[in-house]
Picture 1 (cartoon, rainbow, N blue to C red):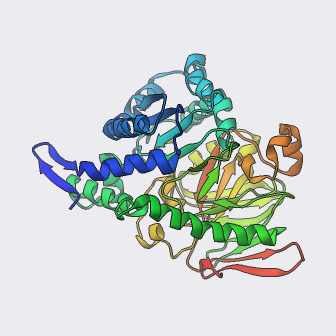
Picture 2: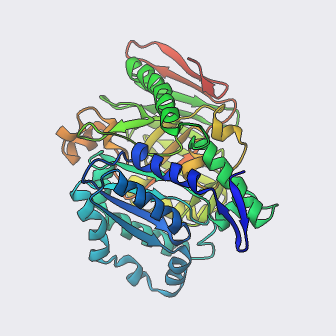
Length: 420
């Protein structure tokens, strides 16, 4: 039992929390001597942010900077501010991230917001706010997505999120259940989490090697829900998954948990229709049961039973938002998927199902990307946008085939799982 009852409710086993914080620091961002660490945390998870800071200093960090977010305060601001105020992102706030990215700092983000936390806020305000922030933090995102900075996204429970995942139990039980699932999926429940992650990364490396050795020209996705999508892959694309290396060759794990093997599509090479398999939590609102039709890479039509206006707002973020920046394969028979839970949190849901992402592509998925200008990357087929939003499409009957460099058709997935 990880939990001890106290008068206020419950507390966590501190040893497990320290184990998790240490994993985040040493396997997540792999702090080196004199690195700076920047932590982004909801105010509800401050205790865990402090533990990460403590572990980072132990590992040799020169400084640890924490930015706290308050989703309820964000909602108050969005409800009461004009669009002009919302879109005027203060330069000093942007510089708080951009300057550290410029110095090659490491970044840990705790993703634990309430999936319904901004429900009722006009979607145009949410969209404008997110676009203003990502535009202002361009330097930070450029450095992160090209692996000039090491970064890691992970989660710990908050009550609002736990109750969304486990609505039919007490507050305490919901929190306990979510802690339990998180500890399992990030392997903190093992005797040696670092060793467990090394083994898991080696497993993902095998899949990455197979995909890269075949140098697929295109992949085709088909399932009984109606998904029938052909995705061309650009020349010089690279598949990645598990741990990655920054530009200096230092490894890191960008997501904890992670089960995906991913690359970028050719911007103008996506054709067909795809149906969602899980809800998408975007900007504190849910989008569910949606489909997207692509022609020459562009989303030309879409439907949604829930959150149609939110989806429209997201696709209108900029021109690049209507194109894909990622295609990722995750077996249906994998730990998060087998939990049969919907987490309403992209970090978990994207690692339970094959997924695509609207918007910006990871430049690190192009061979020798650092040698190309932004214009040259665009000519290769790398999409650029102010957003990068993953949405889940994996099903138990998903079939994926690829055309390799020799023109052969190879089965990659059958019945939702790897064939090799």
